[in-house]
Image (cartoon, rainbow, N blue to C red; front, side, top):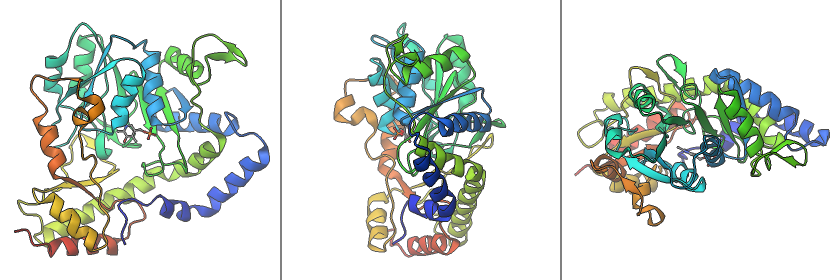
Length: 371
Ligand SMILES: *Cc1c(COP(=O)(O)O)cnc(C)c1O
């Protein structure tokens, strides 16, 4: 069986280093918000190219706390996409605000900036662009629009650690940016984890308070707050993995390149199978390798029969999920979003995937009866 993603392969690749730091944390006797978290916050913020990083419990909390730090809550609207992990919208609701959905660009599956104008209202406070599948959203026009209308930009970088846009790391463009360290992400913990990064010291201070009961010092709350802490074990594991992130992303890119050349070589890339398109103004880090096909469902079943794991990211757009049907959507509609979910399929993609496995996947797809 070839899995679609494989976080255990990454653990095994760094087993000795990871086991060592886990042992060290266990022996230290300090398990929550200590040296490891502090160091990892510095190292990760430095890697992204921003001043502050605040470790939190997961990516959804990172988005939630970023929104609360901006003062966003009841009655406010936040523009995002429906074609994303439900977490993006869930965080907006957690803050008490309402998600408002715009459509995606069909080539890149990310926010269509030309639809932003159609949903703006006096209640709009922020935009959350999602850098989906490892690739940047079309940030320049989104940021220009936000500036013009005095809106916050909060980047959802949960799928694009290390990706770039116009030569800068994703996560260094917005007022704040949010990361998840869920095990399958490009930088993954062995459990849950997340981070908010920002250049703004006031936002950083607010997030520090919000993640732990509003405490400025122990036992004294200066604001309301939550419990959303990154633990020492996960931070120590992430510190082992961070120095390998660029290498791992390179491996993902090599795999994507091999998929492409093999599909083209075998002529399997016909009108029934479209390969991912890459923006020329950014570095795609291939969190996922997403093809689309009008025969998606039968192709998925066929690959399952041949022991090749695939996943649909994501099968039901947020605005069509029962809990979100009342949300406002763009008057241009979400036709591209609804079309994409019928056709997308994520093929196996993780840094340890071998070239032989990639060639095998392409070979099996080559023998699929398209008609
Ligand atoms: C994974 C993910 C999240 C949420 O992260 P968690 O750590 O699972 O809470 C948010 N947005 C996107 C786009 C994601 O892929």
